[in-house]
View 1 (spheres, one colour):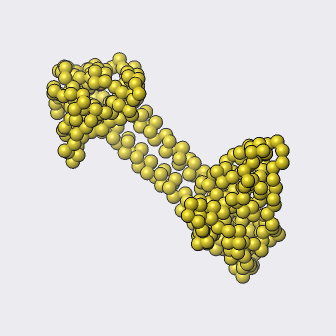
View 2: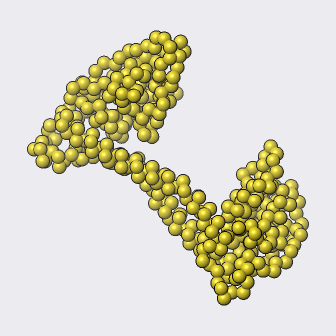
View 3: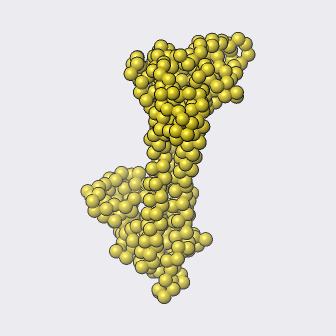
Length: 393
């Protein structure tokens, strides 16, 4: 176990100095900082470029007694899971969680010879660098999702995505009909809750990152909001007229067809000639959103009117090509969402992987030991001069 290998304490490696807990303390280069109030256990190192710098009582510091102790090694040691667990286990519970300077000074710390300290630091930093490079690439996948989705939608609704299909089937872009959106939509249905409870979809019910209904609200009919009056059917597409740039859009499937929607939505019910799946993606296209935004009115809740939506000019392909576009979008966007989800999950593991590296490092499992080196058998030993004072702020 790691704790059995600790052979010294923070007080033993800290330079003598006279400080007061409530005084602001002037820091020096190489001081290792430790948060001891509020958010506990966070660490840092003072570099020459940071100076002049001082702290308050929420930060303790370890001022190393000699150049033969690596400040980076000490920081990593304090960051390792076993030592963090020890520190948090000593927490004094008050209105603000805190650690006393006495606790910090008694904190067990590993101290191998300086060459081993340096090898451990080099190994940790190398592994951390690889993790951070991977983290940057994963973050780029997450951050780039919206731009990749926008590019795919643009190709779909300008005809590029199905260019080969048209060539194969002898169809040209002249087959795309120009009209207004309202020509393809039927009237909205008015439906009021009558008795018992009903399921209600308002704008807060929409996940506008994925354009789906999160969870309808169950409300007693007697408590129904005045806006609860839009009837729904399978294959309807709901589009929020309030702040359209937020893309509160959703496709209504069989599981949601019994719900009542808010009048904040326009419920698009497609007539013959327009596929709901095609319209669902078309309304998410930035070109569509930008068109609506020019008609927004109102300061607090900028909205568009029904006629703004119905009057939008559209260029619509035939139904067979709409099917090709909708199917291609389903495959392409599903792959993009999966890639984003995998990247997000991997990003969530980076912190755990860093902790695992530190845990292995301070169990002597990174292969840094040199058998020929003095004191290699008792890696965490060595004579360390004991000091009774410690740095604090």
